[in-house]
Amino acid sequence: MRELYQRLQSLFVLGELTEQRANLFFITVEKDRLRPLITHLRDREGLRHLVLLTAVDWLEEGQFQLTYLLCDRLTRRDLGLRVMLDRANPVMESIHDLWPTAATYQRELREMFGIDFPGSPRLDEEFILEGWNTTPPYRRDFDTLEYARSQYAERAGRETRDPETHMRAQLYPESN
Image (cartoon, rainbow, N blue to C red; front, side, top):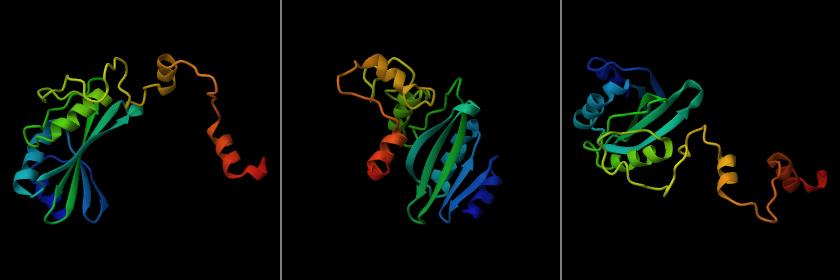
């Protein structure tokens, strides 16, 4: 993979290279440089399978990280491409025309994180969350407790316990 990275550096402006294990590397790429790189990897380097497209919310840094994981099945190597997006305006070019399955990932990321992929098919249709009209639930600033309190009535018999105390009592009843 290091040879591939060196080859790619002569063709593309690349960011940091991280080796996760012998056959899994990650490269950080600027968002406007992803498409030419990902097309090259698919068409010329044998990384033809899009394994997944996912996101991480770096709330404190004000960014989302998109990770595109590509696989070369013949050589059993995986390459992840990391792209950082501004959390205030998370927009990324769609790659559904390169891998049709990307449209499904992009729909999920739109609904769960609020990341937009203009031109991706059916992006504005409800996908998983029917009638959702608040902060996307995978964002770290989504308040699960506040949402539950506003959406669900209190029920008799429901109680809240401190998880640490509760688990200690369950696991070590003799110490109480």
